[in-house]
Amino acid sequence: PVYQSVCLYYMLLVPFCLHGNRCEVSLWDSDEPVPREELLKGVQGAHGLLCLLSDKIDAEVLDAAGPNLKVISTLSVGFDHLALDEIKKRGIRVGYTPDVLTDATAELTVALLLATARRLPEGVEEVKNGGWSSWKPLWLCGYGLSGSTVGVIGLGRIGMAIARRLMPFGVKRLLYSGRTAKAHAAEVNGEFVPLDTLVSESDFIVVSCSLTPETQGLCDKAFFSKMKNTAVFVNSSRGAVVNQEDLYEALSSGQIAAAGLDVTTPEPLPTNHPLLTLKNCVVLPHIGSATYSTRGIMAALSAQNLLGGLQGTDMPSELTY
Ligand code: GLV
Ligand code: GLV
Image (cartoon, rainbow, N blue to C red; front, side, top):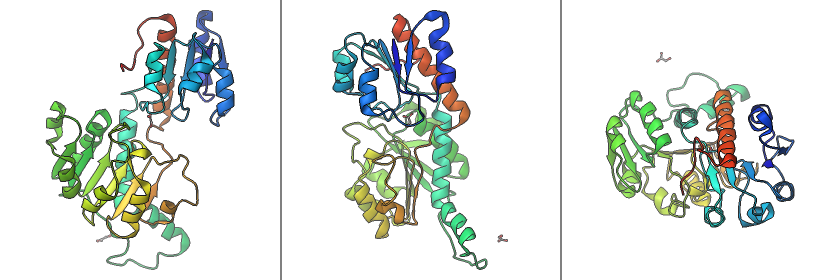
C-alpha cells in the first residue's frame, strides 16, 4: 500500500501506480493539505508515501507508518520538511524533484525581482484606486538592473538559472556566496565572494540556497544593516532563511529599499502580518514552480520515484543523504 497525501495529482499518479496492479493507493481526497491526524492514520502499514512540502515527515509519522515504509517521495526539490536523520535510521529511500522545476522557479524569481524593484503591485493598485493622477517625473520610481551588481546566495541549480536570466538585463557584476566556489559560475562571470562582501556590494540580493541549520536565520538584523539603502532583497528559497522581524524593521526604517518574497514563515502568512502592511514588500504565495507543465512533470517524476523505491530499483531522482 501507498499513502498519497496529494489529491491534485490523482489523474497522473493513479495510472502509474495501479498499472499492472503494482500497488494499492489510498489517497487524501482534497486540495487542502492533509490534517496531521489523517496523515498519521493514512500512513499506517504503507510501503510508500507521496508527500508535499507542507507535510512534516518526522519520527511521529515514521513510527505511525511502521516498518513497512520503504520509500518517501516528495513533490518538491526542497526537503527541509523531512527529518532525514530519522528517515536514515529506518533505512528509507527518498525521492524528490530537482531539475524539472529549475526553469519555472528561476523565471518566477526574476518576475518577482522586477515586480519588486519596479513597484508593479503598487502601480497596479494605484491604477485601480484612482491614485494615478498624471505622469509625474518621480512617481513610482524604482531600481533597474542595467549596470547593477547582483548577489546570489547559493549558486546551485536554481541560483545559476536565475543568474543566466538576469545577465542579459545588463548586470555589471554577478557575485555569489555559498560553501564552495562553483566551476559553472564562469558562464555568468560569477565572482565567489564572502557573504559580507556580497551583502554590502549588491544592488539586488537573491536568496537561492537550501534551508539548513547553517542558513536558518541567515538574513537577520546584521545582514540587512550591511545592505545598501537602495538595494532590493528577493527570496524564493525558504522563509526560514530570513528573520522576518528584522526584515520588517529594515523595510520600514528605510534601511533597505524593498523585498520580494515567494516564501515566508509560516505559510500561509497571516493576513494581519506586519510585512503585509508595507508597500515596499511584495509577498507571493510560494508559487515558484507553479506552471501547469512543471507541476505535471513533478507529479510524474514523484510517481516514478515512488515506484522505483517500492520495487527496489533505480529512482529517477533519488536524494543521497
Ligand atoms: C518548492 O519550494 C520546492 O521545494 O519544490
Ligand atoms: C515615456 O513614456 C517617455 O516618452 O519618456
